[in-house]
Every structure is written in structure tokens, then in C-alpha cells.
Length: 163
Image (cartoon, rainbow, N blue to C red; front, top):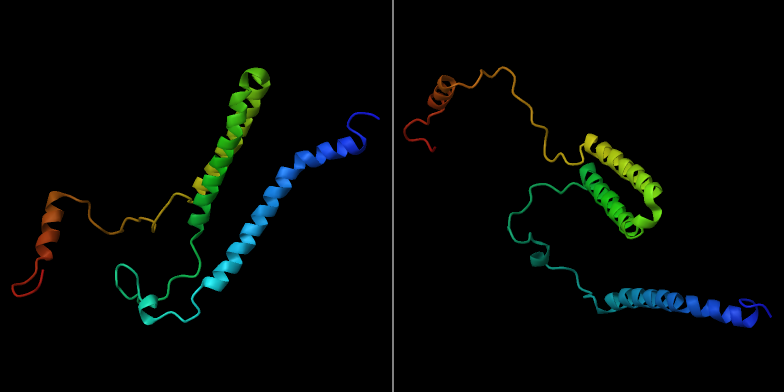
């Protein structure tokens, strides 16, 4: 019999994949156990008014929260994933850098260029721009000490009015 074939080869293959199969089975069992136990142990009554009231600040919202998140949240998560993947691929490259020499250097430069281009794409779509766009008001005079003084004096409150 040739090595690697027959019953001995099959046993070696099973021995290699057995820990992976056991770990996958344990993962599925833990997931199922967690879902079933949360359904069994969860309270069955409806939440009270106190539970539904605003948390921490105590201010009752005047409108319903928006149902959709702005695209910027997804773009920021894409930036995180891109750089996370880059770091994951750079660790093995750094370990074998001396063995792969110039070819490896060229490959990592191309890889970094692709990551940089994707980062520029996300930045151009406003991934890191937070808040409303800031625009200058047209028709306002240029800011000088005289215009500031006249603006302040025009806005002074009258006696008896709250400031």
C-alpha cells in the first residue's frame, strides 16, 4: 500500500479535520443554547411606562428618530474594514519579506496603492465630513472692528427685556 492511501490515509485526514469539526459543532451548539435560553429566561410581560421613558437625559423626544442611518456611518465602517484588511495582509508579508525580496516589495506597493485609492474614493464621497455643510452667508459685510461694534450695539436688549 502506498503511504497516504487506504485506511491509514483516511484516518490521518480525519485526524486533521476533527478539531475543526468539533469546534464548529460547539459553535453551533452554543449559538442554539444561547437563543433558546434567552427565549426561556426572558421576561414575558410588556414593558412599563418607566421602561419606555427616555434614558439618562429625561427629555422626551419631540419627533421620532430617523429610521435610516446616514451613509457616512457606512463609509466610516468601510474605511475601518479596508485598513483592517490591509494590516491583516501586511503582517504575513513582514514575516517573509526577506524571502520574497523585490517581488514582494512591488506587490505590497501595488496593494497599498489600491488601498490608498479606495481611501481617496471614500474621502471624496464625504466619509469623514460630519455635520451640515458650512456655507458663508452672502451679503454680509466684511468683518471689521466697526462692523462688529455696530452689530453688537444693534442687538443690545432694551431695559426690562431678558438678555
